[in-house]
Image 1 (tube, rainbow, N blue to C red):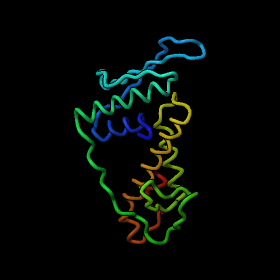
Image 2: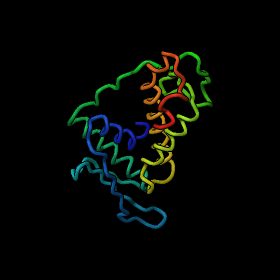
Image 3: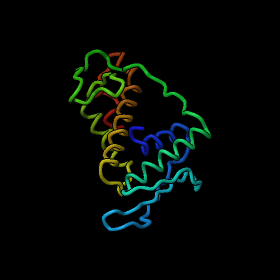
Length: 172
């Protein structure tokens, strides 16, 4: 698994479960080699646990165990439906550094106002107590999901030649 904690969260969402809760505590060790224990629960049920010399390591091990336990119990999540690219043909197709293609290589047009609004919404939905790379990854993923969803929802409008600036994207 590339990112076990994120994979577990995505699995729970796909299976319409509550988000997992991670409880990590220092269970001993020395100052230069601490030992952490993490337990992952969903609706109060223990789904996995793990130990490590850092919080991140113990959370990774616990998430991997929880993911394995859930897939054994409930199976793999349903495949996500692939929707067609809503690009109307007149939007710029800059791939790469501009960040408008997803992991599948599918290109997405960039509409700055829509992207800014999606980022604002995503940032407001991530727990303000989360910090660091994990929080950035969550905001990034949620922003991409929101942005793509808006473009997909507006796809039929775009095919009729109506530009984004006349519709609801800025109000999303």
